[in-house]
Amino acid sequence: MKDLVKTKFPGIYYKTDSKTKIKTFIARIKIVGLNTEQIVGYSNDSIKTNPSIAYQKRTELINKFKNGESIKLSENPTLDIFFTNYLKLKKNGKSLSSKKIDIYNFFYKKHIPNNLKQKKIKQIKKDDFQKVINTMTNSNYKPSYIDTLKSCFSPVFNDAIEKGLLKGQLIFY
Image (cartoon, rainbow, N blue to C red; front, side):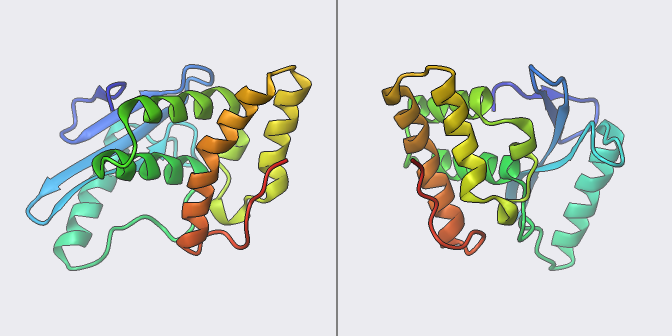
C-alpha cells in the first residue's frame, strides 16, 4: 500500500481518507510463521485510535499469535476491512493485475459511501448496493461506467458469499 504513512511506532502505519480525513491504522506483523497486515482501528472509532493505541493492539495480536491463538479477521468484518483484505489476497495471489486493483480502489473510494464501508458485511443487503447504482444512474453516469462498478464488486460480494459471510446472491439491476 503506497499511500501508508509510517508512524514512530514500529509496525504501525496509517492512511487518511481524502474526503473524511479519518485515519485508518494498520499493523504490519512480520515474525516467524506470520506475515500480515491488519486494520487495528480508526481515528473516529469509539476509543479514538491513535498510533499508541494501534501499537498496543499490534502487541496484543503478536502475543495472541505466540500463544497459539488465531488472529484472523473477525467473522463479521466491515466492508472496508473485507474489501482491503480481498484486494490484498488477490494482489498477493496475482489473480488481479495491479491496473485492475487500481480500478477497484478508484471505484470503491469514489462511489461507495462511508456508511456502507463501515457496515458489517453480514448486515449488507442487496438494496444497500442497489442504492449506490441508483445514485449513479440519477447522476447521469453512462451505463458502461455503472457496469464497470458492478463487475468490480460482484466478485467481492461473491467471495463473501463463498466464505459464508453473506447469504444468497447479490444481483444488481
